Amino acid sequence: MIGRGSIAGLGGLAAMGVIVKAASGLKGGDDQPPSKWSEAEPPAKFAHRVIEGVALRHVSIDRAGLLNNAMHLTYAPALGLWYGVFQESFRPPPLVHGLLFGSTVWSLRLALNPALKLKEPFWRDPLARNVIDCSFHITFGLAVAYAYRELERRGV
Image (spheres, rainbow, N blue to C red):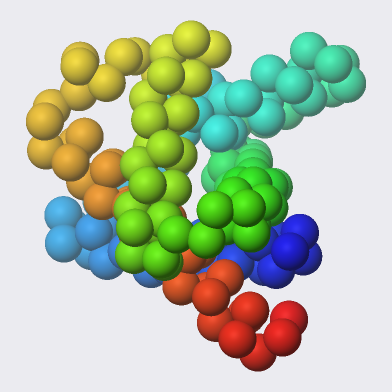
């Protein structure tokens, strides 16, 4: 259950990466790397704070993309693990559980990022940005749910 959930979490991350890349292409793919830490994505900012605050090591802004990817690779399997615990306990169908799981992950993001001062509250973002971000997280949740089911069918 734990390994299956973690693997499903990585599958969800892969699916989310595809949709994020596709959305980036639709808007022109003109995203520039951040030039200062205040412009970095929240996962990269969090990793930066931990490394500089706990490990007392300087981190160049050039590493923001790497830290962002590393954080996603860290928490996607961890979230998948929790998905597995709840799936084994309650057994909802993948569509229902995937939608609930993706919505929950998105809600956690909406609450934690401003609380940790990683991002402004969601109501300061344009509605379209919030809808797109929600769709990314719903994709993640559904992909985790269906990956978990497929892994379970295969006895993994």
